[in-house]
Length: 216
Image 1 (spheres, rainbow, N blue to C red):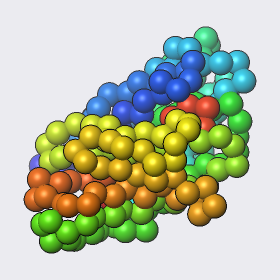
Image 2: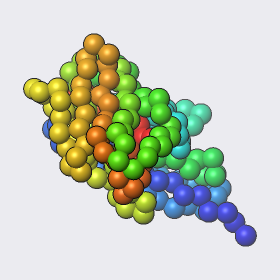
Image 3: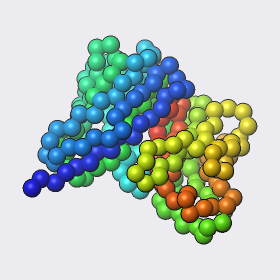
């Protein structure tokens, strides 16, 4: 009997840019089969590049491949870009259990590295106690920052986002986050945690468009 590999694709929103990327929420593949993960970026600008990332459970995002106009490949994957650059496909040649991860594509107007990290893989607090999830980012340009939550067996939900202005951002479910540029941090806080807050939390950052994502 074949084992089944679950390849989970994370939807990255790109509403801060003319380029909006959309992907399937998840894909399933039999082990040993070729996997093709599509990404649409209908309004990609002429100066923007396409990037693909892979994120394993309790790890930071890892760069997979990037391209501009022509098809490209490396030892991990192949990237096929449509002639009009409005869509692309990431191909994994041989799916295996070790490929089970979050995959996401993003577009941005330069090839500079940007990343987010969350030092806390697992946080436990008592009900009613204060909760803080740390997020560090690295990018030299203007940033847009997000926090998402994913409850078990549910999709991603945006908790809050920072675009500009006040560095203390209030979100839903009594969560807040504060941007500290001198520390390059955007920590998520809640003064009184509730048992219903048990979930996975994703910190995300975008430059000219929504970009790298990390979860804890």
